[in-house]
Image 1 (cartoon, rainbow, N blue to C red):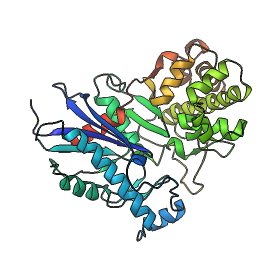
Image 2: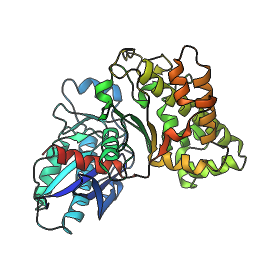
Image 3: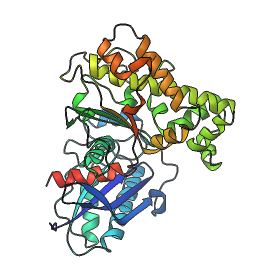
Length: 396
């Protein structure tokens, strides 16, 4: 049935914004149309290339009282808003006159009404973001079907996208974990047939970025494509990440170097595979038995997760690896680097960790070796966009 609006999904990132017109088919599945626009904030007049965010502790303090935006934050925030408005306008002019229904994901901690950004590690705070964007769109003659309901989480939208896209990896399973690795890491979970936002399970499970390994690094460093470069840069060479990018040494190229015998690249993927295996081990054990104290936390004041939760004794049907990390895993399967290392490390952890129930061990490691069929990579690179659009549609 024809909808009285055009559905728009937006993925707002740290460096650019991607906007898509999204269709909903008769089966209530979302799919991308052929109309999209991606713009880097640096393309917009007034962009501050050397913008330095306010100290994160100051941000966290002010978000609970009164936020004092600096002139530079106001300028950079306006750039972000105008960039989003421009990207939306480029699509709107190609569509009919129907109003737009917008769903949007954006990083950072959100305001109490969900429509603003009150803390952001790599950018300006924008507590009135949605209202400012709506005003800009109105000035451009673009009508909205309803106000933007909220700025959602990239991670949650990855999960919604995998659930409602026709080729989504959550669709045909009851219990699954999703790890998307791009600039950062995105966690999503489906248990007992229901999408379970990580914000709702904070008392018993932590997000990847919250977990800290024995070197004092966030596990996100190893679970994201951008983090792979950071490990190579900071632990095994003196080459900055900026220089790596300038030389075209992205994670896929570093993987090629490792397979060709480059010592620093080999060491990098040894680290990455060990930490990813430990993360997957933590996920499957926490879901089945409750928290086993396998990691410390980036925030030392975070409450220790409870061992009690309503999904204990759940075995996952599927573990999904998405975004650029999924591409990297696929690339590595023709070599002995990364994927085979993850498999061997995870097998060893499951088989040797004391006290795990036999049902758990036999399920994940039949015949003493990891059941690799549980793992899938996702080809749904635009999962956050699809999830954002579907969230808006479900909240009409």
